[in-house]
Structure formats: structure tokens, C-alpha cells
Length: 305
Image (cartoon, rainbow, N blue to C red; front, top):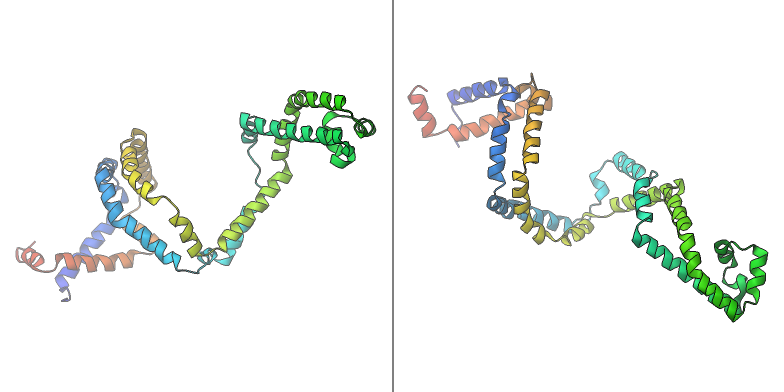
């Protein structure tokens, strides 16, 4: 490729400086952005670019990761990895409102009731068979039925069939009466500092283990994702959201806010702040020379443009 002539480079340099002098706000246009969103959100276009670019890229990355023994923590500096594990291991209290709703739910109540009924029924049956309080965990019955330790031992030591039958009949009534207290105790336990610390410890251990996993292990999990279903839904999801009035209003408002935040900034000042002005200038020259070189540029110069 021939080197671009000096006049062309001079023109490109001048146009780049003119670009850098423009206020950023000149390029922020909410109406144009929403019009572009309408075009980009077309289901056929989304499906086309998803199939042409995103799917092949995703498959290549997963295939590359499947052959890698690089650990996930290698993506992070040691200090950052340690900080993440430490932060993950901090106490994680459960939201009180969530705990109350969970414990009071019908599913949890039925489960607790069934477990408590089964435990007490089994206890009474074993006690009636001659196992005695000590053999089957007298503390459970003493705590559950509020018997004194001494009285419980005497009553259960030689319980007869009739007393056993009466106790069996009373199990259901006792469980119904005790449920409120049991649920309260469960909620208190879930809200406790001990539970919070235990959850944090387990979560921290899980994060530490995940960071020790390899990219290949991550690729195995990614391959289990139903990508075909996601890809099939993507066009409709994008098109749906592109038309939502609330989203469109938010985009327009945020673009206006962005213009306000960057008021007084020029394209050049932003490139300088990012440390990219020299790089952008070089690319402007390179791409501009390819676009403008040749007969089109010659015709423009010959016409005195």
C-alpha cells in the first residue's frame, strides 16, 4: 500500500483536531438513539446478528475454556482474590421479613408438623414397647410435653397399652398447640447471629472453592445451559423491551443527564483523560487514509475541495 501523501495526512490531522474541539453534547441525541434502538430491536436483525456473531463467539470461547487448566483465581490479583473470599465469608444475616414469611408459609408449617408428629409418635410407640425414656430420648418427650424429668421416667417406665393409646391420641392435639411456639423458635434460630456467621462461613468456603476451579470446569457448566432456548427467545425479548415506553423514557432521560454531567467537556478532553488521544489520532489517520486514498481523494483535490 502506498504511503498517504502529505496533503491527505494534513487534511486528516485537521479534521481530527476539529473533532476533538467539538463538545461531547453535540453527539448526544436522545431521539436519534431511540430511532437506532427501533432498528436494532427488530427481531429479524437481532436473530441475524446473534447467529452470525454472538453464537460463534460464545462457542469459540467455551471450546477454548474447555481445554484450559487455568484457575478462575488466576484472573484476579492475589490481593483481590483474598479480599473477595474474606468479604464472602462475613456474617450473612437473613432478611427478617423473608424469614417470617418463610416460616409462616403453609409448606414449612406442614413440613414441621409432619416431622414433629412422626417424632412424637415414634417416641410413644418405642416407650410403650418397653424401651423406656432413657432408651428413646426421654429429654425429647420431657421437653415436648413439659413433664418433670422424674415424673416422665416413672410414667414411661411401665406404660401400658391404654396409656399408650391415650398418648397417641394426644400427639395430634399437642402438635397443633405447639406449632406456634415451634415456628417462633425456628424463626429466632434463622435470625440468630450464629446462623448468620454459619451462612457466611459456608458462602466464603464456596467462593474459595469456586476460585480454585478451572476454566475447563466452568466450560462444562456453561455447556449445560439451554443456549438454544435462550437464543430462540432473545429476538422477542429484545424487541419487546425496545418498545416499552418506560425503558425508552429512561434511555432518553439518562442521555440528557449524561450530557449534563459532561457539560464543558470536549471529545479531545475525554480522550486525553482516558489516555487515548494519541492512539485515536493514529487510528484516525490509518482508517482515514484507507477510506480517502485513491480516485475519490484525487477527484476532490483536483476539484479544489
